[in-house]
Image 1 (cartoon, rainbow, N blue to C red):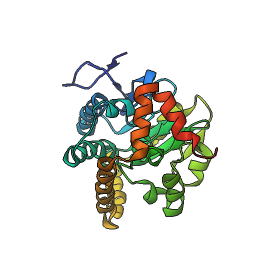
Image 2: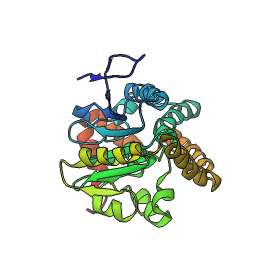
Image 3: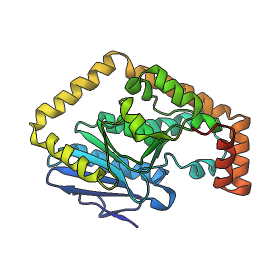
Image 4: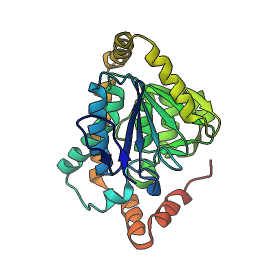
Length: 282
């Protein structure tokens, strides 16, 4: 179902997201519930358009990001990516740089961004959640990065900067994708864990606190915090990790080949079952 946009100068409807504003708060909803709000090229483009408008809109002082239906998001759309076929290194670099910018626009946004997470938040969606300034999670939310399980890599290597290297290595080197909200809070990945059905109201309350403060002070304080990480070399490290991901994706490998074969011949469910069968239950 197309979403409604209340942003002047932009389309009245989107196909993959919904955007509305209310008293200084913007709500950006990923709106592909049949596929758990997986990020396809259209959603990436529409989100970029909306975020650019929201960043410039003087009436908007905080942005809440969440997902329609049963999940925040299942990350980048595996089916859409696999259907493209083989890519050259240059083509992979172009695609992954676009994906990287899609994630990092939430970090770079001059206004506070709040991820309101329920259900699955995995892969690229997990990275996007990390790029937001604050995360409110439902007690039943599940987090993770399963990329290494099918021969893929991390687009925006933010996790070590948030959780520290040991927790990041445990998750990323095993492809863990069932981290609980409670564990995520213990690692500093999530700010608050709330009851089922309370995520949006808690996110709105947080946004109200942000917009009650002086907008210029909020904007410049966020900028100062982000600059601290930039001075420590975060941006350069992320770009180096992105270049490594280009190499991973371009190389392919037997795991990726088998995953894609099963997806084509038996469907995505069978491919995911093969992927997960080789790992112990968490």
